[in-house]
Length: 183
Image (cartoon, rainbow, N blue to C red; front, side):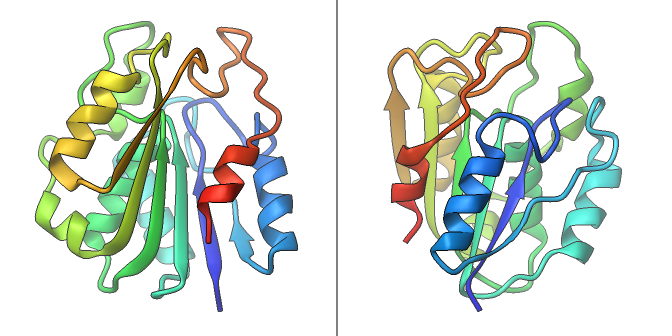
């Protein structure tokens, strides 16, 4: 069965930004969508979130993973630890180096090092989406860093900010472009 696992960012919920829209649209396309409230989302720690997602998710060659912001380093950690290869990962406005702006809480989701070969071996297709004006430091340069490790497709959006941020008043309620990327 084709399924989607969606991972939200720091301080967010399954009701934030475009998540309900994307969940609804993908369910209409026949996907089973798991969009959980991540534990300790205000200060995301890998030690809590990684086991939660590994144990709670269903992973197969028909699984699509969508991650936003701090959900991206979590998704990379999940991919590194899977025993199966999933179909697709769409990683949006993510980061792999510590963020300098604001609270350092999101940095607790980062691993010191990633096994990029394992990550790449556990996903058939990777798409990275970043903006050229992300206010959190998750912009196109961070997208290029991830792309240099995993390849795939790097999409740079212009003037899209963080593609959802309460602090920067970016409501981003819909994301039709994302729906088009999920086959």
